[in-house]
Length: 145
Image (cartoon, rainbow, N blue to C red):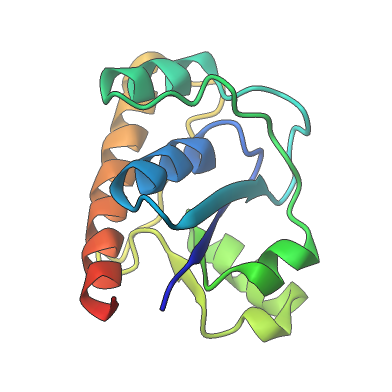
């Protein structure tokens, strides 16, 4: 049973807040949080991320970045990363996480590039990849419920 999802990226202001919002919308009743490996602690989500989520009916305007902590890894049933390097870093830093860390686009065999400091078009491309990845992972989670 999956009751707790942790989404991780680098700064916790672009990709992981968008994925967190999408997971929360798709999986009500499941605890979803996000964090960054090198978080911009206390910063809000990037304005482009907020706008793109608003277009999907999701409000992430209250998001504030936080750094990854070991308790988050322990509590999570699955840990979702944006790329393979992040997955490997978490598995090496937190060996108990092995087996529950997945790239968001694992089945698509791709990384989700960081749109930080890019234009809205790049953010939209990134958002589209995140929407696809969340959709695929939600389907897998629904099958094991």
